[in-house]
Length: 506
Image (cartoon, rainbow, N blue to C red; front, side):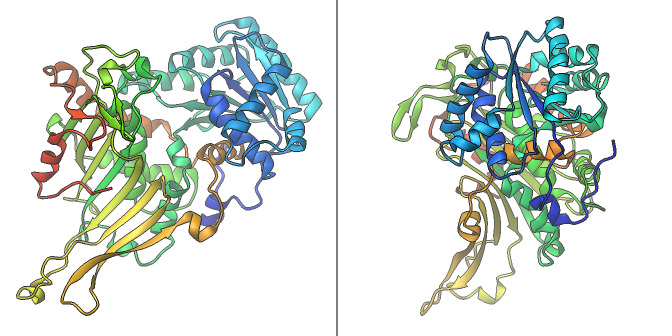
């Protein structure tokens, strides 16, 4: 199936007047947290905004012995608790819930897929879904190969309509596993049927990066090595590992955050203008960025692990005391790294990426720091200490864009940095859609622009796998090396200070 070409760049962001064809979404792992917290509230809000087609249906697939009615009641409670629009509208929910069914089965149980095929055929006949299907793998990653193989064995990978599969991160845990998983998935589905989801790409501010860069004539001429000193990309979390200790201890910050979320942000900031605003043209440019990244070494990285400290004024335990975590764990909860993109636009410009848990603030931000202006005309005045201009793209929690520049203080021979702020909420007066709303709708529309392609996944892993291997083969680290509630290990400050720079205060 050909990738749709969007006739207007803004149309990709607004989706004006576009409604998917009737379809059925099968959610594997329907009893899990992702389904109740994110997926079904997102679908309900799409229904509320009349973005879902008539006859749209949901089939939850899980092992628990539930009835359709019990499943619907659970989902109603989940929407009440998690929807951005608040408690459900009873009339709207009644209509939406008519399309919800529950299908009991184990992921490796052949009979469950035989009966699933029969159920989907019945839904096609009853609700007019025309064989159009989305399979969503909201399961642990080790279940992906089993589900994909069963879908292929039972003829569910193709139908009289269209069939697509959404696969959650992590997509592999290193290059070899990502390549193996890609091979398994693509032995059953075509690449254009596969939607590898990273919810960060569904965030409104992340989507706006391309519009900001390429729809405004004042920024692109200075978006290069001649004017930019360096770029900082930060994703900071105040929480620890919560109930994910068992999973996180086999993953760590590099796999959990850097390989997907932060590398995606890097690509959007650094990519060249695509020839067309369509899925493959955009993703082609993102892959070119990753292929131009200079090979990394351990000297380009700093890692850390939080110890006991405080969060929101309350004492919290260290990572090694978390449930499911080894008392001698060498898993990193903080990573900072520096990389260079060896192409014409970015040669010599360092990109600093950092992400960590149990930091003082929850914030995601891209900061572009411009080169300092010549100050010789102020050399013999009190005005010679100028801050550099910084453009900050704020992804969460306060979505917006700010620009810092210098201005003279009224009545005094002083220069002070001032900021121009744009905030989504204040400017547009509406609540931004949740990331999953946008991404689920895009998949149903057949638009893969905000999803990750095979070569992008593998190129990203190819960059970071040598670091993981070097860490595994190196000596044990003196963990924990930063206090919960601080901004990370002291080594991270020393790391950037060696370049004559400092981390941006958030």
